[in-house]
Image (cartoon, rainbow, N blue to C red):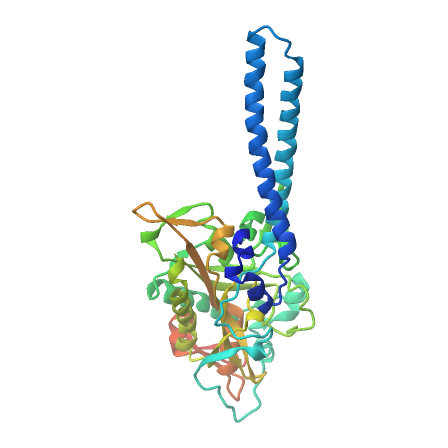
Length: 431
């Protein structure tokens, strides 16, 4: 959550920065709230001082045997006024918090202008999109013909935008998760976590999913407790340290987890309705880093390279783009998208986003830092998908399909699958 004073400080140019991402900061309302809060705090301090003096006057007059009725009434009125000011202070704080929670992060100046991907800046491309001497099938036809993917039965079980994997498909899904986790834990220095998929409203608020994106979340409850299904492991991973002071000398912290993810995809109906690109439930390996705030920009380049590594091992063609200011996520100050080549669509599609949120999430989650010398230091949070299982599977089967309908398994993944190819009938060639 932002510091209201910094948003109003002309030196931060916050209103202009937010306009770049399509958000109009109501500085007039914010200024009035901040000003009135200061007035109420000052009036409250004065009233408490007067009340303390009035109480002393009552005691002194009583000791002298004087009539204290009028003094008592004055003291009572001061206490009433103090209560009124405290109530107003709570109301203003609640209104100010509600206002600030709805303000997105400030985009970095280096981002290109624009609100859609067409304004993105391509950073690099890796690999060559495969060319086929036959008409390539999409992942749905490949998966359903071989029997490793069953969308019809998934719809029967849960409705549209769910998937059932079978046999070699289920093994492939499990293999990808283990492959990703091994790379990140053994080579990139991440600590693996097993996490709850249900979290509190406060936890969702800490990373910026609430209140902005409530309609995109699945909400449930246990007994009398309100809980939300996580849309990404970023939510619990960042909030592991909510309301904590981290020793700065122990940073960076690198965390990863493989979890189910749940998204209602509100407002997206009609887009990507076929197949695995946009599902209500999917699984993903997530990467999170907590670093000293002044090192967040270099940490972003690192976490981006970590997210790219599995794609390179799998030999999947992809590109990296820097999103324009108007297209970054609510909590991000800068975002790189990794887009993998999808042969059936003849285009690149997003498979991972790597974002630096600066201190935006850590302020909301009340995560602070302190050095051995006792000096406080700001902590920044970063995240990247490393990677989603479903979208990786889409790219893998489509880029590795063959004319006979079989699907080759990249060499790096064979130790995890135990087979080198999936045949058109769903059987496999063992390694």
